[in-house]
Image (cartoon, rainbow, N blue to C red):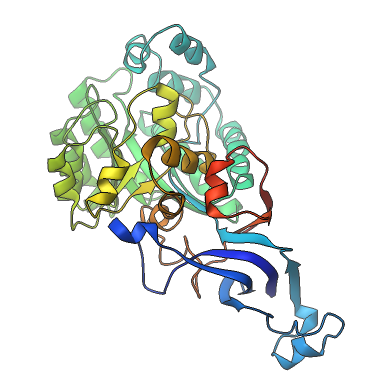
Amino acid sequence: MKTLIKNIGLLAGIVPEGVLRKEGAGMAETGMLENAWLLVEDGLIADFGTGAPPGQLSRHSAQPLRHSGLDPESVTVIDAAGGMVIPAFCDSHTHIVYAGSREGEFLDKINGLSYEEIAARGGGILNSADLLHETSEDDLYEQSMVRVREIMAHGTGAMEIKSGYGLNPEDELKMLRVIERIKQNIPAIVRSTFLGAHAVGRGYSHEEYVQAVIDMTPEAAKYADFIDVFCDEGFFTPDDTARILKAGSAAGLRAKIHANELAVSGGVEVGVQHGALSVDHLERTTSAQMAALKDSATMPTMLPGSSFFLGISFGNARGFIDAGLPLALASDYNPGSSPSGDMRFVMALACIRMRLTPVEAFNAVTLNGAYAMGISDIAGSITRGKQAKLLLTEPGWNLTRLAYQYRTPWLRQVIV
């Protein structure tokens, strides 16, 4: 089956084959074509160009389609009517499988309690774990699918989903089975991460729980693509993290790390040492950690939605790019510290609060987000042979307006 999108006002996000991520000055660049067309064949981007598309030399005859090798009966034609076409967003850090709500903690936050104080009172991650334990697997799936549909409607075509609200073997596996079920039932790309080390589960000592996570890992690896650890102040140490990542590596799981949300934790260094695909949060980062990331295969990933919601510092995104590093941005969609998966808002925050240009922010939520999930060879850009996860806007939009008018309706169609 073929789909031809014609009359594209602006085709943006064009990247040559073989380019898997953008870094440094390259983040300010992306290929664009005006008055463009794009051909999709069997779900892949087959071709694109400017001017009259294949088979569209005449409005009134099917003959041009046949002459171009396209059977008019097997081609769906979409008239973009001057709208912009871009690759769908790639959200490399979410926690959208959870039960219930933590809106009560939202009131606590308004009343002056910090994230750490809420957690110390038994709220936070442990609260979500209690709710999830009481929720059936089918109900958890249905609740989570509401959020999956929400973020897809906002333009997300690829997402990573973490466990971490189970905090015991039975409930962590329940979460991973739900993520696998989501993966099998939606057209977006889904990657799964085992985050058993999100907090110390109830009834365990710290050391007992670290060992429990290590013991869970082989079974979790039946469902997960990656392993993650919350390496931060008050949660898991670099030594804990190294032990858990070794177990993950033995089970075939590549590392992804939570680091530096609450303090400079050492998580960046241990992540790089263990070949982590990404180190995430980075609200607080030193020049030494930036140096550790230089020339590594690890993608620094910042989560401005969490900074916005918690009222904490934003990551030094400008400094990372100016130092020649790559950068991905993700939503951190979760019930406690970032209850939104709108990646256009993430783009806007990056421009408004982190001083990125719209093109830099765009690359961070598309190609580099895909890299942080290990899928930039198949998604994240307009590249021949990649999966056609595409967004079609209303007429008149461009990348700057996308971040500038961040609440104005813009999407005409999500093509996945």
